[in-house]
Length: 334
Image 1 (tube, rainbow, N blue to C red):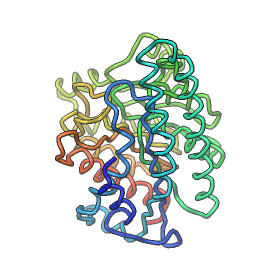
Image 2 (cartoon, helix red, strand yellow; image 1 turned 135 degrees about the vertical axis):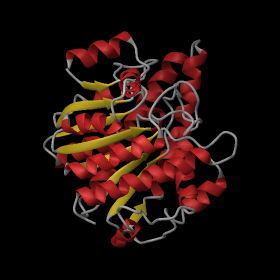
Image 3 (cartoon, rainbow, N blue to C red; image 1 turned 30 degrees about the vertical axis):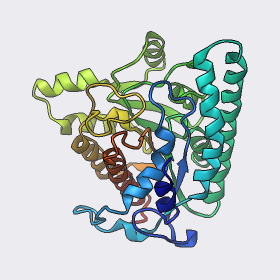
């Protein structure tokens, strides 16, 4: 993580440095990528997004200036999660190297993953108890587990809209029980979670496909979306199907590798295909138009651009701002 990113993150997000009492939404930045199995770097995503966010224009031509409702970044969590990520990342590298250290290193990653989950759960509960809307910015896609667990105590039932290149339904991956590749499998065990709508999925194993089939998860796979659009169907039609498949209460989980890699090429596990930025914004607006209630969201797997262009974090900041607008409007806060 760049020191400049940390410095800018400490100045808040979206060009505003506000006090918590002024905020309607609190964003939890979780700097964690110890389970990332391909390209590391998503731990630096939250601070990089915060740094890039200061150059956005905040007038939404459809929704207005929802920045004025107050969006607060819990910057203290950046350093807390980063301190856990550093030994976790080293241990995960020891697992992949094999040898005598591998088993003890695997156990260390699983222990640190639980610490992250507990920390995020407690921090979520802290802000919920103070009447705040809470959202999460990862980090790898394992980051939101504690957050969703806390939300599940407040909401008796909700469905998950999951935009991703992967199902994330593995029982474990590389022996990591809270892997980025297992987050949806783990969330499915929470009693409040009442089903999934998976969008953009295009890279998965037999185990995940079988689990999705057995649990009757609803899926709009990437190749199926492409084929239907090529055959002349509209994205509006597909979005209407997706939104209709969700219950009244919705949790949105957006892993940026669900987008075409042109938009976030530095993400940890990029896959060809995926949604365009405009398609993603249209889907967000379709949720808003539906009158569904958004109970929370995460934006995960943004990694600082490896070429220094800040393109990934620029896209991430814009998606984050739009998701904040959706959340505020859904909760009648704007």
